Image (cartoon, one colour):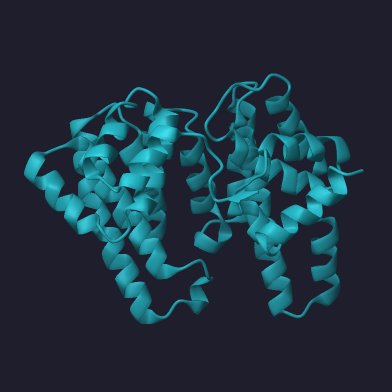
Length: 311
């Protein structure tokens, strides 16, 4: 079982291991025309180079290299979220929020520079979707950035993931908006594409938000009903989304991430055959989302696997 590495990209792994900017920019440059791979590498390298954003931005300024501008923006984004942490807004102190906002703002100029130099590249815009969410820019600006992203890559998996988050109630949106977007995405997704997994992602956001709200309000009966029935109550559309992907799945670097989402959601709904199929599709590669929404990721996965793979 491997937690946090749900992809296969040995070239990317080598670049991360060396910690070399030359290697990082090389693996980004070689996949300019493969948007999904470039998006994955942008994200992974952004995490791997946390603490070096200023250095990378200086190198980008000196060379004018679009890959380095993109990498600098991605690293600033990850540095900012590391400062903020994963807790709810009420648990983030004023000082940390100020550092979070200041660091996120540093990402904007490098990403716009990368976008200007490579006008067909969706990845700077994809990262800006997440940056705009964190900076809490107005909805019109967020919609403009989203439009620029999908104009360049209509089915980019991580961009749709970020859009679900940006539309969620915890970020000033609503359950209705995030679920509507997820359902529309499933309807538009090509058959066999793991993009349909944005639906269980949206449902997990609603599920967790409602659990937290009822827990804080001490509405015990409602809390228990959500905990035990939410995914069963929404099983129909989750099954349809799963089947649209599973009938003829195409190879995709985010397939294991999508299997994680469907396995967790459909196990909560009690769907044995589909849960088993998605657990097998994970190949023991865990993504923290959504398992961390249910408890300890490894424990939740083991509990689900023992129930659905050994029966």
